[in-house]
Image (cartoon, rainbow, N blue to C red; front, side, top):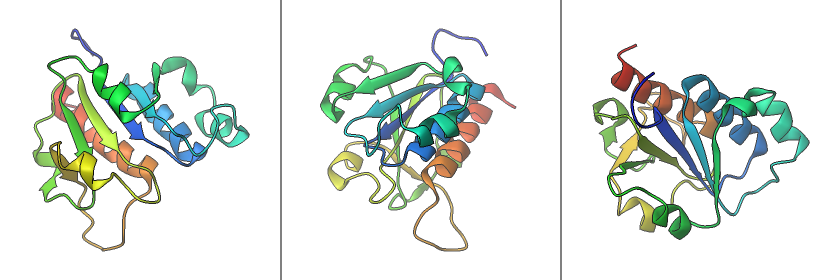
Length: 155
């Protein structure tokens, strides 16, 4: 992986489950992606469940904590592209045309991203041909992050 930016940024808006965040951190570690967590969280980063899920992978993750959505936005570079993921989107993630340094945004497990946030961003969905309400957060983030990496790096 080369280039002036990290491969990707994975952003979790108000995550609720320590285990999911730990698993997303592991995905970030193996892909060289940076992880952004936007408060409030439904857990503490020192929770046993979080430590169990992340194992020793946290050493390979550049973690950014943001006190709010506004604080996160204020820290974005001018050229940043933020892609929101939602079951309400119409565009499939494989058609996004991801670029190095993109931000992939996922909402909290119980409610997803709020409408006010989705409306201002390009929004993508993961196909769910079998139905169901939504995929698990860690699974969705893994699928999207690996597809973005595939597009960028040509794996």
